[in-house]
Structures are given as C-alpha cells and as structure tokens.
Length: 139
Image (cartoon, rainbow, N blue to C red; front, side):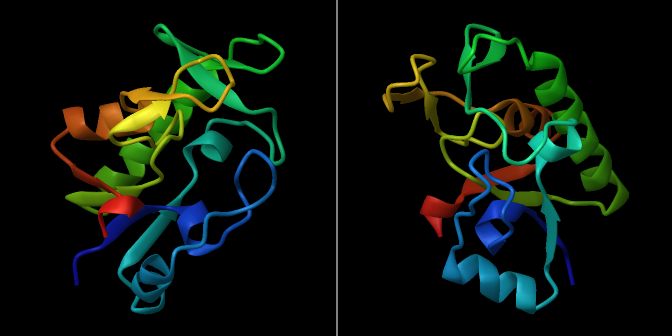
C-alpha cells in the first residue's frame, strides 16, 4: 500500500501552535487504514507546542512578536522532504492556510485572519520535488 504524507494536526494530534488540532474524519480513516505517515514540519523544525502563531511575510516567516522563525520552517520542510523520500511518498494531504503546509492559501502576514493565494514552506518544497499535494478541504 502506498503511504500518504499527512499533516499530523489533521489526524487529531495536538501539534497546532495553540496546542490544538484540526481533526478531519476522512483523514482519521486513512490513519486507521495504515496509509498515513504523519508529520508536523513546525515541530520537526524545532518549534515547541504550544508556540506563537506565525505567518509568511515576503520570503520569511515571523511570529506574533516579530521574531524571524524562517530557519525553523525551512528545517521542518527539509525534514519532511527527507521522510517523503525515505518512504517514496508521491502524494500528501496538508493543512490549508498553514505557513508550513498551506496548499492554495496562506494568511497575509498581518495576523488579522485575512487569506491570500500562496503556499507554505513545506508545500513548496514537496511540490518542487514532484510530490502531489492536496489540502484537507479538497477531500
């Protein structure tokens, strides 16, 4: 069975910035079937849970205090790609609007809830390496 890379928060893992999750019933079915490899790029990049919310501004990622956390987001994306290659992953389902995993939309960098077209750091790297990405909203 081919494995699918999945944002861990979508499987009910409390790894969101606020220590919550984004449990999605269809994702849970995939996990229970053994088809999922769960990842949280932000944790894999060294950020704690809970952590301050972060958004992409230009080419970098900043948290709500203005700290540049681009290095952690980059490392998390690279670690996710390493796992994808290890398991010969060809597709992923990632969390829309996340600065790591956003597929079609991300927040605009003002921390006001406004969305703009764009992709997160991990999504960009996976796509550049030929991995097909869907958001949970496309299920």
